[in-house]
Length: 391
Image (cartoon, rainbow, N blue to C red; front, side, top):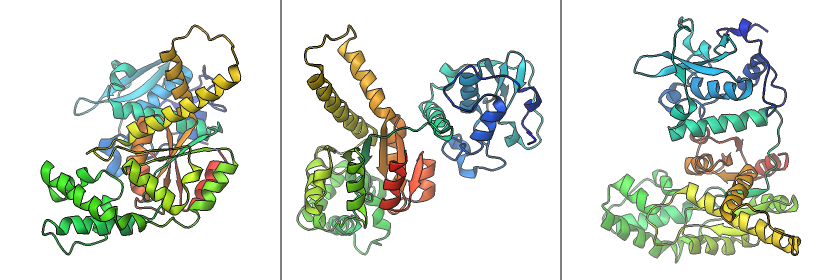
């Protein structure tokens, strides 16, 4: 195979890290990354046109620091218009740029450029999240199985087809403000995010009116709408199969906790879950990342209880409880998977270092899920269960 990236003929250095099985040289890395680079790993400002010229479009900085992780050396940057830098690598005098093909023939100068430091680049949260995502995606592509043990399910659009009750409740609330005749299809955008935020965003309600709209919504939803959310076909079997595999299942939803629990009881699937995580009904805004963190805390507490039961008087080590808790959460995150149908679910997973599976039978589409960082996609509950079972 002919390699066309800059310095490919000089990229004859060997890996100093064994974290990625099968990656021995930069050429090996390029081969695998060619199937890993995607919309999400592309820089956000360039994502709309991905891949404009090549799969390496918008991938330079996070890739260069990943190269440094594996092969050592330093990262340098070619100054670009607008004050940005295009990053490349120098490993013991071997200069190469595995993302250079995005420039489609433009000649770059690889001499006398300033060194780049990850502390500076990763001060941008979104860039660090993309870097983490790329590292995890590369490990998966190298055959490292994540062994997902803790599965977090969104509720609306993932377990239940909730559009009927939710849309009816939104219509009821809007009519209280004299807003009638809204397109039901367009009102599906209320499924997923917090209601307070949606009434403000889509109807420009002030805080007082948004609070009133939420109250009207719940007035209808809690009496009628909540019961108009059937399970998607195959959800019951999916949950049953995952429990049989020994997976620990949780619900992580932006729906107020007491409402979520009511829906789960009504649909008869409440017994599958270790815990249900949702906001208090008084919460105006919800952050999916914080809900996922809470679910991981529940999982960690359950594991700690199991360890205490098995320890039977063994002596604790000298590490602080805080350090142990942080280590436990990192371990839980490494074996966790968020399953959802909207970008909120995928983004929350990325922000907490958790992999995600986007379901295409809900209310989000492929582009929305991929741009938000979905690691996997499934077209049905059966396919989701099969994918998780193979990991």
